[in-house]
Image 1: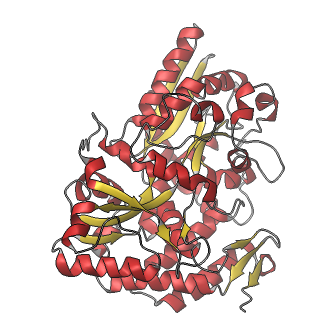
Image 2: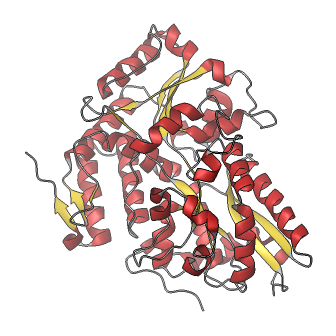
Image 3: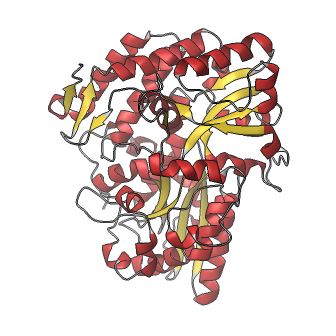
Length: 459
């Protein structure tokens, strides 16, 4: 039986229409699939040509099969843009025929999938797993549902900042090290690059629906969280309407795209923008600054499609400033992915055995290093293979205690989509910042209901 969709999740109401088209390519040789006993299926998102996650899973699967003769593991990469991946994953989990036994979940969508009935609680398993207690509390919180039950095993985490090209900034006359204190400092640097370094994109700040959650999390929210507004009030459990910070953040994007400080619109709206940025623009010195996370260095590792041995001598890092330098003066967001057991999978005990192998200390370390991520478990943090594994890891690890997290509520994925739409309206010039903020407020009320919102109270 297909789990019922959560109330108000209009995206899921559309899943049935495209189900066969989206799910079928992911099954490969499974065909009609009456799954054999001992056979497990693991799905994950493959980013372009990157192989880090797939190699990690396949290595752990081989270890598991060697220890359990008679078992087999099918590793299914879902090669898709971000929003399409979530749709494919949900379509597969909605059917006993196609469901994976272990699914890859971005923690921002976890509670929506819990509300939709796709996932199995893991409390009985984690209570007997010694490594569960090595996780930091915020990682545990990220995979805990509103019912207080655990629904995922967190992978490594991340933080975000500004990657900048030393040579580009030097050519623009910007002193090193680059330490912007306000949004105006960031815009001043971008204008200097535009005016003094031809054929270089001054600033990449992901925006628009094609960029999916990147546009929301490491795009608008890296701005919004540096204002005096809150997206969601944890105390009142209400979403904010009329937020000055929303208008200010959209105004910043309006300036970036209106003054030619960002990517050309055609590139900005390309779902494959990130791969272009990582494997072409950054190595070739065609971009000055990119607001992004610690993990992107995996694209430049030896053997990667974008191998770039000189990156640590070419790129540098700066903290993302708050709007006026207020508060602690900088902002970062953390997120991460998790492994979950879909409710319709036939053998959860066997799947949990594979999950324990996937998340052993050595395999968790391997994943963290391979994807240039950050540890959120004491056993991995204390492992000699983690300390200073990447030139960028000390900078980003130092940000972890100060990180903000996205609102952990079931409606968040839809609200994130509304944020993405607002950024696209501004970047394309369809709406000005105020009108786009009003459209976001209207969408917000439509998603959660007026009783779950509250207008911002300004001093």
